Image 1 (spheres, rainbow, N blue to C red):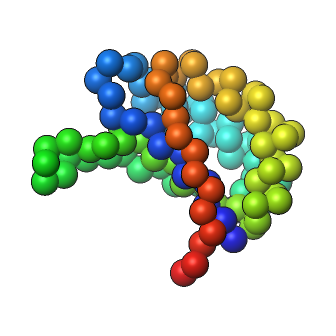
Image 2: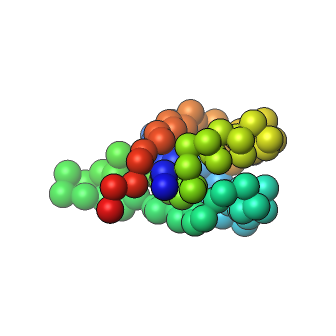
Length: 102
């Protein structure tokens, strides 16, 4: 089991259309990848911490059966999904693939 984490930095110089992201992009991700090994998709919204700022505006956590399943899903629908990013942000997301240990 792996989790693909997509981090959208909390940069006031960038736009982020949260409504579009939640109403269009995340449903599109689920529609395209649910039959390709996507087991769960969670979206976290950063909140101010002790220092007063959240380093990330939004974090998407996508759980897949395996790294291979994610690679196949990304090959099949990645261009469409990654091509949708400019519709909700002009920032650059960071992606991390992690093995689920517990």
